[in-house]
Length: 98
Image 1 (spheres, rainbow, N blue to C red):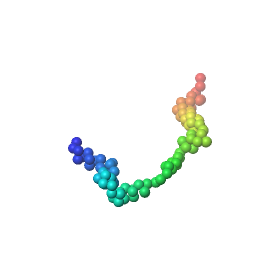
Image 2: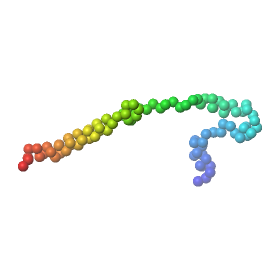
Image 3: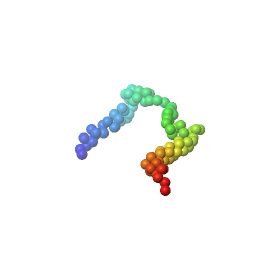
Image 4: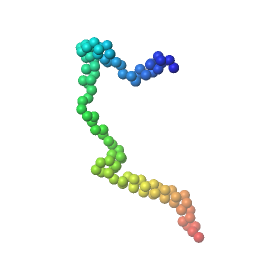
């Protein structure tokens, strides 16, 4: 691949230069106003706690930790499997026992 093709493809990933080395080395503080404006708009302080939702947050994390979803899932699968087995096999042998 040519360098220009790669540069063109990566141009969306690489942020534009706000402060060039020539501005920084010349000591011109007034030319850094775009950089200062950019950093002044960034949020300050620690990142906010993400809102955790769903089954994991409700049953497995924190003070409400419980294994009840696993127990109910096992029981539901057993009940579903037994129902299917009864309909397919056991119902046929119910009245034909020897």
